[in-house]
Amino acid sequence: MQTSVRWIAIVFLWVGCDTAWGEQPPGQEAPTLSETVEEAVHWLVENQKDTGAWGSHHSPRPIEVLCDVPGSHDSFRVATTALCVMALSDSPYKTPESRRAADRGLEYVLRSYNVKRPSGFEHYSVWAFGYSLQCLGEWLLAHPNDPRKDRIVEVCQELLEKLKKYQCLDGGWGYLSLGGIETYQPSWTSMSFTTATLLVGVSRVKEAGIDVNPKLVERAVRSVERSRTPVGSYTYGELWRGAPAAGINGAKGAACRASACQY
Image (cartoon, rainbow, N blue to C red):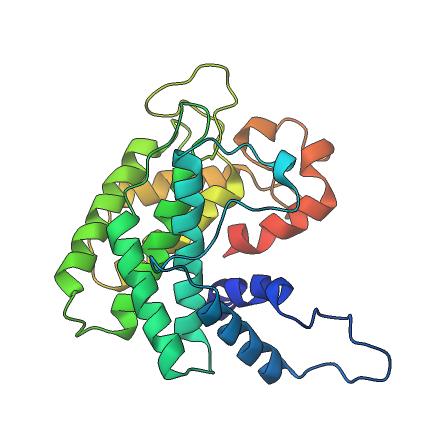
């Protein structure tokens, strides 16, 4: 499961490759998994920004995501960059260029992790915090003698403090305030999969030897547990526990949430 979590960026990047999965011309064999991974790695290297980041504001479905300027865009860019660093670091296919790209991406995360939410409504910054923690924790585990170790540890400690400030009163984390009252510390509406994602990041830095407040973890785990339904799926979050089989809690979305929450 740990490998699956780390490889999620490679899977997402398939859509950016020239050869889309399942869309080969007639008579042409589908690429092998190794060929697809190599193509994805080259795509990442070629599409890295001059700043060391990945990601942009361009989207084929721009009206589906509320994303205020600049905070939410900054948050998504940092989160995307952290995912790409993990993908390049974990890929079995590496080149000198891909190693440099991963290192530049890490530098960007270390410079830009301190993103701000644009309002009391959008909390996308938690995605940047969670994926940055996972990225930095895994980097420390893989590179224990990195000369930037002290700086990485310092950033991880700051991010853990930010998670404490952003932790909802129910113990989880959410990316939007839907309760009508926008407060400095979100009052409720945590999302099960957001909480699970952040717990993965917290787990990685703990594995790397960084102290983690056990109360922060315990409250978050209980929040995820409360979102679990009798059939083993997970509701979108605590706000939706009263109708576990309705609307947003439907089977398709629940299937996407289950692996992270179970993990």
